[in-house]
Amino acid sequence: MIELIDECCASGARQEKACQTIGLSPRTLQRWRNGDGIREDGRRAAAQRRTPANALAQAEREHLLVVANSSEFADRTPHQIVPALADQGIYLASESTFYRVLREAKQLAHRGRAKAPVRKRPQPLKATAPNQVWTWDITYLPTAVKGIFLYLYLIIDLYSRKIVGWEVYTDQTSEQAAEVVSKAWLRENVVGKPLVLHSDNGTPMKGAVMLTMLQKLGVIPSFSRPSVSNDNPYSEAMFRTLKYCPKYPEKPFEDTLQARTWVTDFADWYNERHRHSAIQFVTPGQRHRGEDIAILTQRKALYEAAKANSPERWSGKTRNWEHLSTVYLNPTKDEGGEAEK
Image (cartoon, rainbow, N blue to C red; front, side, top):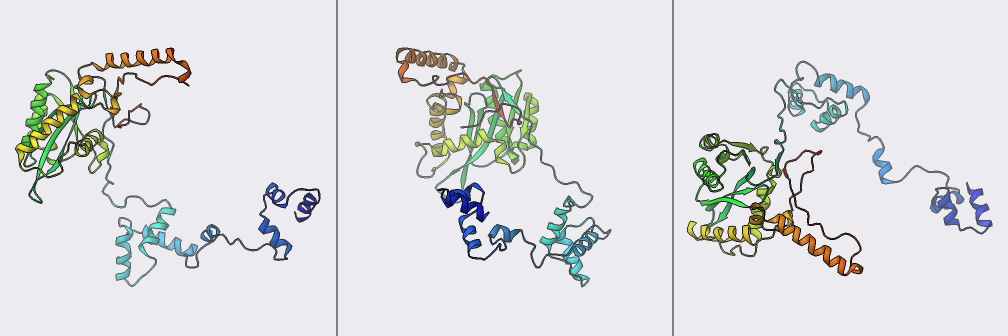
């Protein structure tokens, strides 16, 4: 390789380009010319690939697996095996080594007769019109007394994002949740229509009074996985909009009346004046009433006319003002779910 590089350089090529062509570093070429020869790979990544000096031998690994799978320890985790062996005066390896060896042997499964907990994704939901799917949750509202909060119960329509029901209480109960939902159900005139109500796994959501009321109204309950807020993203995004809007008070609420007054103003602003980015910048109220189709059609015609008048100002298509006909909640990978903005 040195002779080839010397031949290239004698013909007028640069040494760096010649080394690059054959995949050799100029520094390696320099070491070879100095007579150092080929040395051991000194890169850090190569050092990490070397077998550690304190690694278990193959016989030790096999013995560890035999012990872990014995009748005495077959249903125990390494956290339980290591102390039990220590009480017998035996030390084979640390808990982390037990886990690593079991993992590499593809034996790190749920040990014992009890089945491993399974948390399936909630059933995918789809809304193609208002009042087909509602999502709701409860959020804290701070008060002037530290450690004491008010609780905002808030329901939104998945398709239109409209706030269809809300109330502020001093505590969280299943009875109050049932009252908020039943009032929204009557106000939106959902009688005789299929409706799914999605929420998390809080006590007010799964209380006996709440579930009985849903059954009476013919509303189908849907729940998120335990401790998985992403399963209810629309309500979570709603609360972020509420608490980070410019109108949100800088000081805590003095009482329930003040909180209800503020939420009343916010709900009116959100439903009728806030242009929502996820529904083509129309208001939730407009989309809920079906007015967004005409609005988006007018916007599309306006942009096409502007492009026709000044085509030199447009390098491609006009802005997409298409009506969003379907909204998904927790869609599967093969469904065209819409991401919350």
